Amino acid sequence: MTEFDYYLAQFVDIHGRPKAKLVPGRHREMIFGAGAGFAGFAIAGMGLGPHGPEFMAVGDRDAIRPVAWMASTASVTCDGHVGGKPHALDPRVIAKKALADFRAATGLEFFSGLEPEFFLLKPGAAAGNWVVATESEALDKPCYDFRHLSSVSGFLMELQAALDGAGIDVYQIDHEDANGQFEMNFTYADGLRTADNLTYFKMAAQALARKHGMLCSFMPKPFAERSGSGLHMHMSAGRKIGDNAFADAQDPRGLELSPMAYHFLGGLVAHAQGLTAIAAPCVNSYKRLVKRGSRSGATWAPVSVAYGDNNRTAFVRIPAGRLELRVPDASSNPYLLTAAVIHAGLDGIARGLSPGEPCNENLYQLSATELGQKGIERLPSSLPEALDALDASEVLRRGLGAAFVDEFLNLKRAECDELLMHIPPAEFNRYVDFY
Image (cartoon, one colour):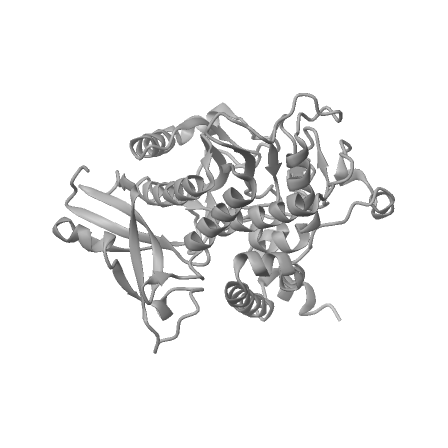
């Protein structure tokens, strides 16, 4: 193992936000033994009180990466332990259990690829104000625009180099649908590795953006008139990378999906309401999950529980032979997302659930009556609605763990209440002299 002067004992809280301690190199073995100790009550979502035991971050020797923006430093991805055992509320522990359940049920590995979208912002003229970091906000359709891509190419190339040094293979970078919005895609892997990669990507993107005088924001919908940032999740299964048990060229529907893939998809459809609470976990998420409101002419986010061939208005798009879940956004915790998707899909496999027939129409243009005639439900339109669905889901409660679900619900309902009490300027201006 390459030696570094410092090691970050790093894990994520319930929000997916990285937490860490800096450990001098001469004490690195402590990370892989008892672990680095943290006060559990200081970490969001771990269910520990100020009078409780230490939360110990125990390192994974297969998850050590150089930190390009910190001299002679490596990050060590850790699992949370309490009382000498993996902690049931730690997101990475939850994901590892789900992956083990998938392996036990199918004899296969679960593979995923995540596509992070993000905004690059810079300080505006007014204090506390942020504007896009690219050269112009004038285009209605800035997607793939070369001038916007070129204007921040120094940051994007430095980020790609940092990811490459950490073993993350970036295969394309583009300017997305909103001004100042970008996407960086890296190759798929087993579900745990992909979640680790996404976490490292966010750490690198935010640190290097600060170096370039910018803010890299993963807020789902920072601008009302523009599309939001998604985290589209591609899924397949196999015995090793390159195998795909979700693919079947003889699929009579022409989507090249196997019976297993259809049953897994059936589970996603059946549990879409509760799954959305994990995939779109903040109040702002639901301003992305709308039909209209983007100057480009499309929000690119689903509002209906349907699937289709190359249908980017659907809950699940089918790129031949795999599934692309389109509801997750950039604020979701990749470990919890992985676990929730697996448990929903496994229930579909176990019960032989059917997802129904594909829909290749523009779902934004169908009325509520037309959707009802096709048997297509809508997704939750608010976080409280999604939380109620998660609360009622026996499958997700059992899969993620009742203690975790209760902790998540309590934290997120408090977040909803806090923001409900806030009076934004637009609301004040509309009503202060209206009645």
